[in-house]
Amino acid sequence: MATTKEDNVDYQHSHLWLLTLADKKVTQLTSGDHFHVRDFVWNPDSQRLAVNAMPAPDMGTLMETQIYLLDVRTFTCDPITPRRTFSPCWSPDGTQLVYERGEANSLEGAFYKNSYLEIISLHDGSTTRVDTAFDENMNPLKWVDDGIYFYAFQRTSIRLFLVTENDWTIRSIVPDEMDDFVAMRYSFTADGSFCAVIYATTDHSTEVGIIETTSGTITTLTDYDAPTREWQLAKHEIYTWESSDGTPIEGILTKPHDFDPSQKYPLLVITHGGPTWISLTARLFGYERRLYPIQQWVAQGAVVLQPNYRGSAGYGEAFRSLNVRELGIGDYADVISGVDALVAEGFIDETRMGKMGWSQGGYISAFTTTYSDRFAAVSVGAGISNWMTYYVNTDIHPFTINYLKATPW
Image 1 (cartoon, rainbow, N blue to C red):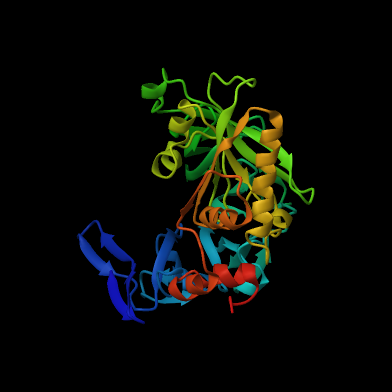
Image 2 (image 1 turned 90 degrees about the horizontal axis):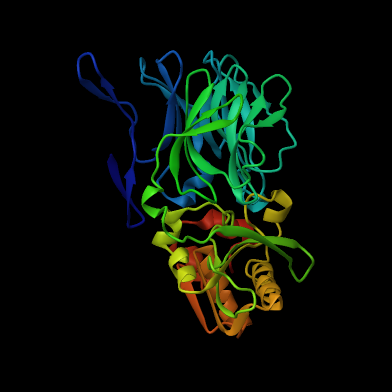
């Protein structure tokens, strides 16, 4: 690790080191105050590395992230891709590299427009775009003889796909009926026939499993759910409504296990951060335990709604673009229309409603305090209350100007 001090801020730059097992020799491979390693992957020849790096470990330099080719024999380390390229994966023969490429100019939609897969040849530096009609960000995981595995957000799930190398057709690896499947941690065998995965569903919290990629069959190896099996846990379900402008909105609704529609229940509304994130039907105790204890609140008789408001991931580029230059306004309309839809169902006690959220969800909560008196209490978690102070006091400048289309002033 190398420490620098710039603009009165201490940064910890991550660098790569090589440990040779035969002689236990340790060699530093990267250095410098303007080079911060995000991740890396070995070439099949074990002599070169694809290194994903940015100038500093702060979001202000995110758009400058590139992929470098590092030769452990000569210690050369040169950039080989444009800016805003991520997640490198080698071809089976090691002559090509696939990576996720996004819009580098934040004013042109770097956060809300789809990224895509691009391939670069190490022979001549030529590039090829993986040309598909897939309407979501594609996050590459493993390149095998049959094609390139990637994961992507799909409404209220995070799923595994394969794009074939010959015609760029896309196949879902996990069966379509598992529309509650959520996983982002994958580890493949060399030929890609099996994949270890950490996943969750509506009925199960995170477990370790093996996916047979040809059939999509999942074999679960752990049973972390065992201690909770006798608990009366509530199920997350999908709830849909229309926003004030007619935009279809989905959310996650959680009701007590002994729910009675003839009764009146307090309502708690939780908005996720991002905004390019999603609320999920899967049982993710980590989120629910660290931020908002949904299961405990529902066990005490509350109904919980988590809207996937405009700008959320998983619904395509057009939906993610709906809150550009409208942050808070359209988001609020999506949230409050969901509340109205639930109230119309007849089982919500309108005198006992609360609103909360973290980060972008906190901003929506702050926005709610000035636009509505429907809620008895509002909690703002790490939310933005002033765009100008946020812009000058944080390192997330690309996000700000991406959605505002300008600096706040």
